[in-house]
Image (cartoon, rainbow, N blue to C red; front, side, top):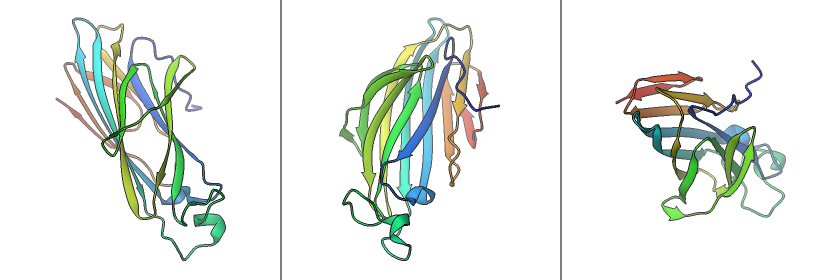
Length: 178
């Protein structure tokens, strides 16, 4: 009921969290699409997955008060600087921003790995962040838990899993099982 992440033991899962790093109210202009593709080997429990997060900043550069679309860090008006964090039980094997290698900080919270990075999305533009993960889940069947972040603009999800029937928890816009 509180939206907390359950224990990651024996299952795959993720949560994507943005934190405003602008000192403004630009959050309502951010749209997110999250595409998650996982390959599961039921004989070993091995999971290899890719997550692509597209952040689309629809903020204009004018037409709103400074406290909404300007910022305290010297970026052009309408820029969205965000701290993006991805929670996963799997190990991070790589991350790119718009196809360029990037580094993420690594922490843990409530048994989950947390991979975070800062990025700036200029006014009326978008950026795609791709994470690759690998690991083993200790289960006879694949289970996926998804915890959405409450945001002004609801996320759009595309979930593709190969190698197993899928049970999942969470609110998913579209799910495809291959």
